[in-house]
Image (tube, rainbow, N blue to C red; front, side, top):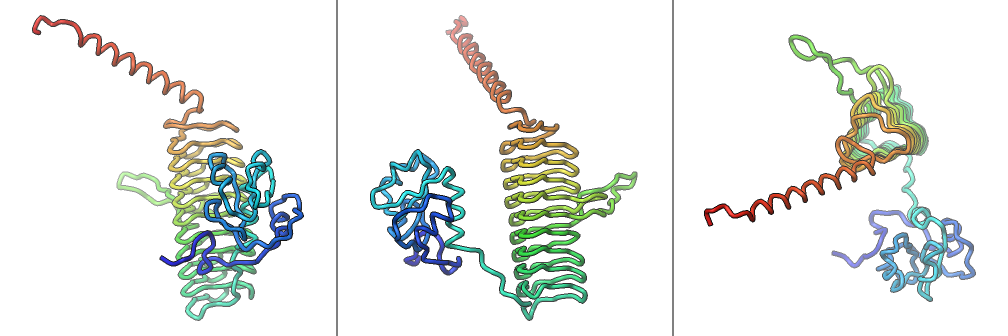
Length: 356
């Protein structure tokens, strides 16, 4: 191991700065401080030094805050009094949101390096903006359109006719076909977008595949996690709404429609033709059956099995998925019955049998 410690190893992450404390405060929306010190980066409370900024968003770590050597700390107003005397308190109502913006200030996304690597394959009829970057051994199909500022990673495959809007990023070994992407879409390494959906008819002699004739429409500011899959529609389109976030290893079936700013956590599977309205959240390993509707701002717990429509604003857990209060009432009832059963069995065990 080397001597580097803290966030943002320069071998892997671009850096900017140093930044004035005033610039950091402006980035996170805190009142401008009188202090004119310079800050050189970000770090956790435990390891931050006088030239770094840190944050606290969980009261469980107040002790770490009180002992921190950070030069500035982003905190909620309720915890401003806990900031050590040597640090500047950057007081904001949402510390984690502010931290995201400050971290991006010191570590901005790597810009595209315009040009096509000599080993890449760009088929005739493809259109590449001069400001796009195409990495080693990538393939751009005929008729594809790559917008300005896009970055296509090594071994990625952009199929014929695919459209990428401005500033999209496609990771190594990802593949995209039958899809139209908006602006600032990030497709992580190994993701598969636009492959045939799981559709077949049954005959007396076996299965007959149904042609999957739809597309995938991915709106602006979406992220598709590593090794996730988004099937194209069968006769209509699969749609991922603006601002949505798909974690790694997520499966989206054909004709699924996600609204704006949905959050789909790792290993979730959403079956075909299901609709998730805006701001729905699905916890890790949750499963949603096909042809259902999940209402706006509903929350589906980890490993839940959703087999019926979920009304807007409802939080469900368990399998079959049940509203939270009802689920825990059922759990409490089962525990009481189990406890009573054990007590009854114990009482019977104390009776004399005539054999002792």
